[in-house]
Image 1 (tube, rainbow, N blue to C red):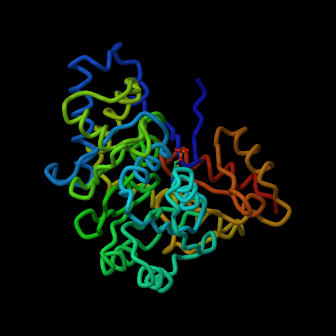
Image 2: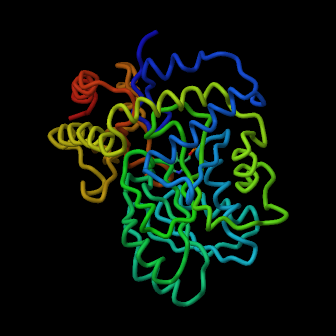
Length: 359
Ligand SMILES: *Cc1c(COP(=O)(O)O)cnc(C)c1O
């Protein structure tokens, strides 16, 4: 098999161990071996940020990251709650779309794509009207911006609002302060910073902040149902058993390699190499380094360079990069540093980029 290096923001290049884990034994999701696997995964996910299992619980779902976000939005805001969604990219906008699809009538606080979240406007919104929950994306993968969660959390805390955090592209590699930020829930997925395969997503839930919503807004995405069943060793629906095996192995590798701080350092080193090489070639990053996550950076396409030509030239060399979304699709390309990538892969990438960029 020729090795493809995925530089898109998930799914990621798998390690040999994670790939091998996918071929684990056939297993029925109603058997005790499955209950053990699921319980181990739930424990390990809390351990990523050292969370106390008397306060926090993880719910494991079969679906992509959006499934976890949808479960979080629809399960955590009580019927008499009020939701404010903070948007500065595709994924913030998606949270609003989810809330709207369920008739939750969210209010939206919009900043431009790539712009920082306006803290004064956030304070003003929370002052003007009482909100129970603020939904926000930690790392807005649209642009690579790492939103200033400490500052946003402080504003929410001041107005006694709970946070619904889309941590899909940050969980496992960026700092998430579960103790200080008023987090009700954080949604994430197996196949980004944790290096598992797509198919398993999860929500880390602050048990004291999970309301009882009867009847639930959604049958498939009811987190209280997941928690009740999973705490009892079961699962409401069939789980993707093989991706559980893969996530279990990925989490073992994650802890063996030093946890989220080490992963952040690793991604940062990779991104810095790519970023400074591109700068030398005259390719400008979209955002300053301080504003950007360790996970993904967006770069301006040079004049006369189409995304398609760049993508195709790199793909021929075994590297898959990622296009911009929406209005940014003509302007930027994105490179992510997640996955089981070696330094020699980055060496080859930089060489291929030099050849592919038009001068
Ligand atoms: C990847 C991602 C998602 C989920 O996307 P899926 O395609 O459903 O996995 C949600 N939010 C953010 C910030 C993401 O990067």
